[in-house]
Length: 69
Length: 246
Image (cartoon, rainbow over all chains, first blue to last red):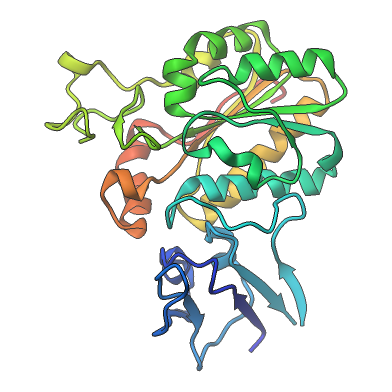
């Protein structure tokens, strides 16, 4: 992986704007619930993230931090 | 690995109260990022509106002064005239700016006050429950236009940015959207440019941001973003409406 993201699951409201923005379809909702009752988005186990930050650019709740090599 | 994207410094570490997918929260972040990049956190003053963004002061780590409904431009004018070395912006929704505050906005623009206005257009009154706003599209269903807005009964959608663009006092007006990453990046550029113009004493600038309101449009956030592209942008095309420095 050339990059990765960390998602603050407590801030996530499961709007899915990140999942549709990720060109590599690396993001999916978790099976767990957060304290607001949403299924927060997580990075897939087999994700191939290049750190493009499109998910973080669209995330309304600033829940995503992006790292790149 | 190097961190390449994180929460801007001038945005407090507080969870937004906005609904999931709301354009307000994206607009907040763009403003905060522009403030950080221009390094004006200690000399910018914001004026939040009445509406969904009424508690915007809880989110920005900058000085803010709440205004009465619709009077954002009048309050911003006062601040700017007393403290001309500060960067002053007013953040207003469509009901606030284009209905209740029409007079204040129009005349602040006509006087060419050196302020920046961030105009969030989501085509409804958001906070009060999705009533018709002046910007509601023809045929659009809202709680007060159940059969869809009719031109005969309810009038036509108001293109406030174009109206202000006719005034010699306005210097920079652009319409943006925050429904896709590409549009978010363009909107950020526009917000930053508007602040820069104010710092260069160019004059009145207004950035209209087409903002998705999934809750009141009765759509999922993803559908709402698509609706901005497919329906809203036909009525309100994106782009620079006026730029005196071009």
